[in-house]
Image 1 (cartoon, one colour):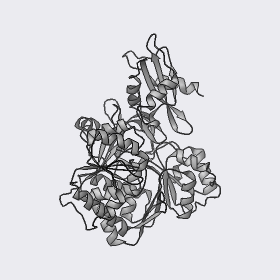
Image 2: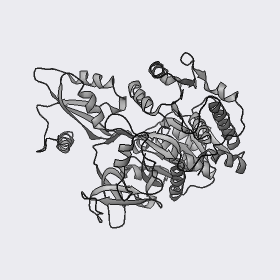
Image 3: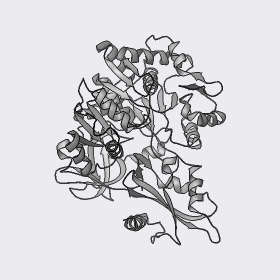
Image 4: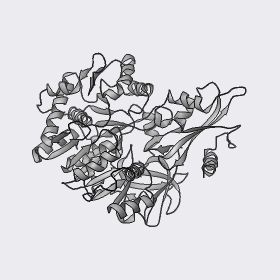
Length: 511
């Protein structure tokens, strides 16, 4: 279960096997397992020379690229904690994360130089830039790595329960919680991934952001254990994805429904040869039946569908290809080492076709939230079940279906969006009296936000003004697509805003 040893074992077993292709580089990087392990040793030696020890956090703020794995494996060799940051966040949001996690070193790409300038001013730390000139005092990552020795690095006191990475969830109170991903959790997630039929010779194209559990853990880490090849791109580009699927004879591909829809409208969709794909996996939202039928009809693609979450890993549920249409809308059945139950208001187990909260138990659960014992304690009940906050049910055949989100979270373009965080910002505007943010169905993004606002008496504000106000304080993907002004919001007898009524009102209103 010692993640830092994965590459060393792969160098021993298959040193010359092609391990990684970074297609976001020009020219592309093509690394064997020997190359990858030696790069990880070099970076680990440099980090060690900077005083990085077991338990220290090292952060990275960069678009997808192989350097994410350089850092992940280097940290794992030292027992340090890989801390990948969501590059879509505003620098002020990142600063709050810095204060909570106190990283000692930050690695970043030139895209986020302005954010890093602000961060370094408020939170001094050592910085390494991947490209460009970097901020004042920043060191060039590749120069540092290549000038360091590649002697093996190990942490003799490392245990399976030690933390390998922090993956951030959306925060209902404004600050994302950092799920502690242990070495144990990663190993068990790989065992759960076996149900997806990964083999020793698979070639996987990753299009998920590396700060997500999807980017690091869906297939990327299992591929290292199995000795396959993983391809990275800088950011999702439908034309490039289709070209790579054909050129590199990719056998496994995973994406969210929005991405699959975008691929079908790419200019090279009709000519793309996808015959090497053994299967595709979809997650994040139900895959529309017409889309499954189109891929099957035009490209002979077999679809698997899955469901995962930051705190429990990406391999929680799986829906087999033969069930993609028959069980449309289902997230599938629990993977082998996952116990999934539905409970009612009194935390009692419910039977088939009874909706309640989805709870989970198993060895792939995270080790709670970093520096947040209260949230850690609240997440798990006395029986050891993690409460997801999702309302779901299972049918007579044991297939699970998500119904609603107990915590009002919605998913837009594959990103979790928490209304309470947006509402907190809206309430900072001097003209806002009451507000509620809801997610509404959208054909492109799955769901998009709408802000329902009641203004204070004798105060004025425009939709454009409020949208700009939120844009200045939130990551772009969190900003609602529209603002509707109302005389009053629907309120329950207990004084709570009835968001369900708002969703029904505007869903019907939008057709």
